[in-house]
Image (cartoon, rainbow, N blue to C red; front, side):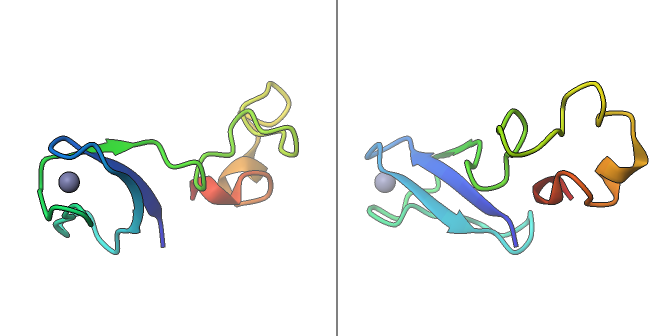
Length: 75
Ligand SMILES: [Zn+2]
């Protein structure tokens, strides 16, 4: 399950939460506001990481990338 990072627009709390489906309403853990800005999760982004070739020329067009061979966090 994807973990997303949010920042509350009301109290500025930044937190991570699991989102089981995209229609699920996420509320602030501190003030229960729904005025949240979704940030890019550090857990699901592997692009540019030194231990993966994903995003570089040798890997990007290759089928192995889509099959989870080099970037399991993206699919
Ligand atoms: Zn809040």
